[in-house]
Length: 224
Image (cartoon, rainbow, N blue to C red; front, side, top):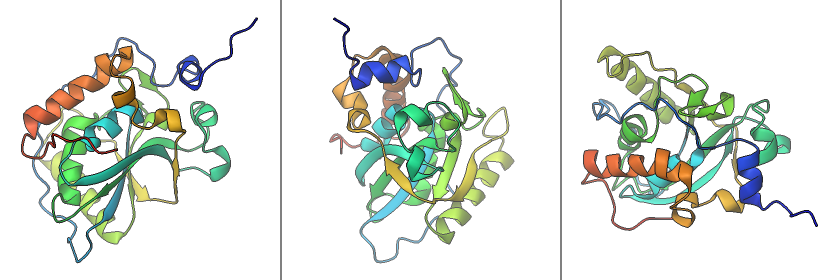
């Protein structure tokens, strides 16, 4: 009798976030953002970042002090195509992304950007991250308002001017049309699958780098 594919097995069969040898760039502590989004009176704000396979990006921000919740999902395409099978083909316009809800009294948008550019991904890789290739793995900041767009663009210009990387930053900045949550088996993936080969090879080192580079920003409690 034919065995039915579980969602996880199907995910690996489709090739996304699949283990492979890669030339991942080492994490680096880039300068703090010179300009930032005003905290205002809100205790909850939202950021949406795309930086390759969402498993690792989610895991990094789950451990940042001041982050309230993180969801893996898809941004940049339509609702009709916002599912893993279609997005993995790289033709829907989506990027694998994470939605980060945070308390701006504890951590600012600019500080989240610094973690994003220092630890979560390599912003010089065009339409890829490590072993993962395709526009669905692009580096992309999806902004929710004019302040976020202004700060994100200013920060990229600041990092380029400082020669923070050996190659140019290719991160895109665009307004968020809508965020679509990914399937349940992608949520909290690292926590649920700590021994998965991809997690061990590509994502666990990001957590170690977060703890090393941002010890005061790293929370002992992981949010979900």
